[in-house]
Image (cartoon, rainbow, N blue to C red; front, side, top):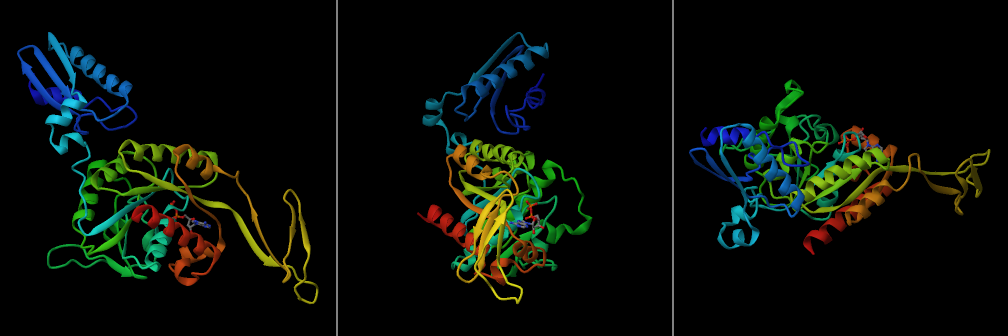
Length: 380
Ligand code: ADP
């Protein structure tokens, strides 16, 4: 049996909690063969001893099962020794994540599942950062359903520069690139991991972003191989998790947040979207004049209008507090609770984002506050 055959056997072992194998993770540092004796050296950066032991045992079991070896030794490289002798690339399994030289901060917007408003959050966050004087790029990596072309009302194709780099499209002061711009409607519905990794790398390396203060990434929903590949390809300053208030969405987002933590990307905070229904209006008498009044709403209680007859109430359609409990579990702030808003939905779906069409709207203000908090966190 040669080294490649050994690696083939080892590549059947998945790293606990991931669907990716230990070889592609770069955890198998060395394989030494001497007749029927084998020594495998593993380099696993995890602090979790049980995971390291699980992998170590699995390697032994697989090699024994092959029936090709008499003597099997599995070594796990010790941390202190590694610190003294190893190159930086060995110390940090993610050291080969590429860094975009001209981009100060990369923020990933992620969600456990689709339809929770992740792209809406990514687009409006980018616009809010831009409105606060930052140079902002927006990269839509949601290959399965790129929605930024719709949200931002873009149906052009990007040009290619003389250096053969994709030139981001400019709209509302943002530099924007999306899988949707280049893949069109003929893109295969199911992209496989390696293809995605290749396309993603191209986006990172072959887009002429210019100088940016922030690059906001709209990740595909979920926490599978695709997301893992993405977060490994690029140095990300931090991630924002978007969830709706329901338990199921929160359970999904928890998995996503744990994925970032595992690959040492800090989770900057949680955004709860579609967080209750915000109702604003006024009470009129029969002649159409505003009156001060109290509304008695079944199952909700009493709402008093102000002097001008206006009321403002939040109705929790779903269970409340999912975002808050998740942020507490992660020990990160709840950055925003964005209500269900017809104005936001209409703006989003018509390609005129609310931050542009109505920057003073209550929901726009929430986005401005979100952008402000992130700047404070990242700029210090
Ligand atoms: P995702 O990226 O998570 O799949 P999108 O951002 O594409 O989700 O949003 C899905 C739909 O929900 C869109 O039609 C969008 O306009 C709508 N939407 C998002 N956030 C809100 C909100 N707070 N209130 C009302 N509609 C929303």
